[in-house]
Image 1 (cartoon, rainbow, N blue to C red):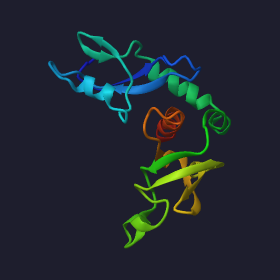
Image 2 (cartoon, rainbow, N blue to C red; image 1 turned 60 degrees about the vertical axis):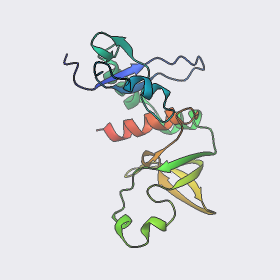
Image 3 (cartoon, rainbow, N blue to C red; image 1 turned 90 degrees about the horizontal axis):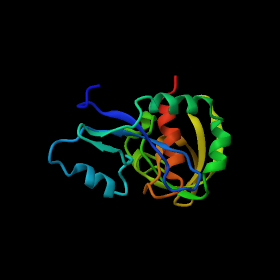
Image 4 (spheres, one colour; image 1 turned 45 degrees about the vertical axis):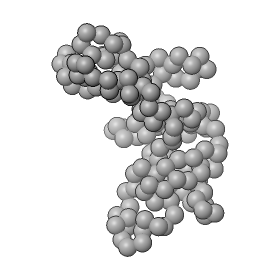
Length: 173
């Protein structure tokens, strides 16, 4: 295995609250680098603690991604999200497929890229856009795809359920 390449890893849940383990990308460690120390102290960083060995920060199991992806493929996402999300919570829209974003004034329209909004409830599962969520921004209510949003900070209980869905949705076949 080439340790100079990023690696997908699964980190066990150490919270003891029954929540699932999570995936991360392990980056190679540069000799003398303090980047790992910075990343683990950064509340918005999306990696987990990794095994610190002489070849860098590596996963305990090379098959972790495949195992997790199989679990995700078999998961009933609407049911799983209903059980694992706590409403309301705040998200930021990080993706937006709508090409109208580049039109004049579009950035000021509600529910757009970079906007913070409150998630009120889980909505329907759309065949083209995935799971939709009902959101509220500045008194207006609308719907956005769950795969377009991010919860911050990662200490929020909804961070990992949303993150798992976003990663699965981006990598599904």
